[in-house]
Amino acid sequence: MREIVTFDAYGTLVDFQLGPTTLKVLEDRLDLDNLDVDEFLDDFRVMRFQAVLEAYRPYREILHSSLRNAMRLHGLEYRESDGDALVDAVPTFGPFPEVPEALRQLKTRYEIAIISNTDDNLIARNVENIGVEFDHVITAQQAGAYKPDRQTFEHAFKTIGVEPSQVIHTAQGWEYDHIPTRDLGLKRRVWINRFGRPGSADYQPYDMLPDLSGLPKLLGC
Image 1: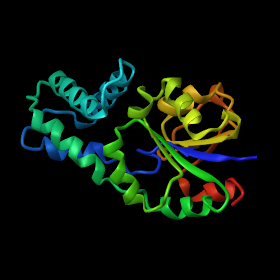
Image 2: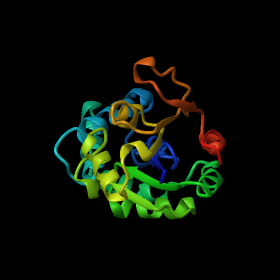
Image 3: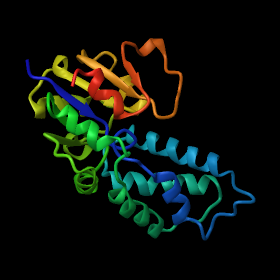
């Protein structure tokens, strides 16, 4: 029976350095004596999640609007060039160190695919940076929806040509990936828990790993 391992990209395969990049973009206007940086970045994260729950628009627009809203919340002046700089940085992000070798091992037994909340032209270079060929790269742009909307997953499975029972989905994202896939009937789910969070029995069954290095062994490669 055909089996495929699908992956979230940013935070799972790609070291999504959005926080440090945002601070660098804004460094000329950040008053670190009066700004709680962790709170600001957390608000920016919340704004991004809220934005993907709204009607679909390109991810570059998501980055612009969520950064603008987070900055306004903290009394910071927003410039269009801030969002442009952030968008331009995304394709430069590379993989976590263990990712390429783990993917090469998985390809000896499985097809591999990406299901990502992004635009086609943003993720293309990230995939090149990983240096491993994927059988499929499915984006929110193609699906016309963002995870956690099930439409994104359903579009991916239809495009790949598999039933959910043939899919092993691997992701770091809890709210984007593991909550919405609990009842999709997937063959298996693997949580890449890079931040050591406790998780929840309410969303079992899933396997948990701290990074991708143990995934080939877990999946019998």
